[in-house]
Image 1 (spheres, rainbow, N blue to C red):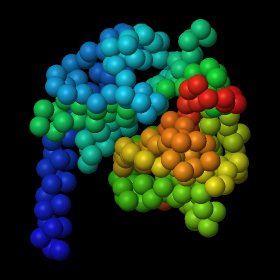
Image 2: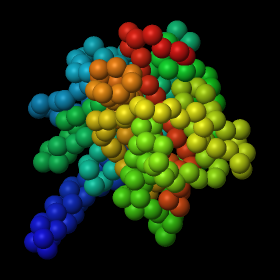
Image 3: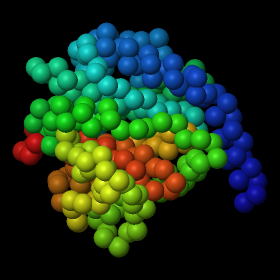
Length: 270
């Protein structure tokens, strides 16, 4: 056991050395610039095999969201040096083609280039979609770096996000709700910017949130989870809705939750 732990510790350390925050910042900036320019090619993209998905389906990067050229009105980047991954939240208020996008980017550590991009892309007709409301509330929240002495561990941050997701199928799960806590769901907001804001309201039951993949930024106390809302045996359908839940954790407690759910061709309120 000690030998295995030593190997894992060494592997994690080596990965972190290859994936500095500075490198990941450059990569997420390159990706954001490509979204704005409407080019599916950017300097940080791997010249080799690329895994590319939009709304949980394999897609052609040349004809996807990167080909459109977007005026991004709000963006926020997070960086996971342990997993060598980045995250971008982008809000586009263009009235004719509005979007709210959550993208996860993963690197090939041998080349330090992006070899996997997974995006949840929402627009008109998706769950509670209201880009004006999304921009209004997201731009007013405070997602500043957390002082080193107050940072939660990666395990605590991930566990807080998982507990929230597990609650949808098991009401006995204990979720570390913060006070205040606010959830931005589509354009709907559970808070008013007040000290007693809550985000433990309107949580359904009997729905599994499965196939989760994570980007965790310890410095900012965040975890983004891309997943299937409903899952293969959940109440939504065979595959579930393509979904992203991003969490801000402060002092082990949930402070903010941002959710995106793409309805695709399914009937969807919003």
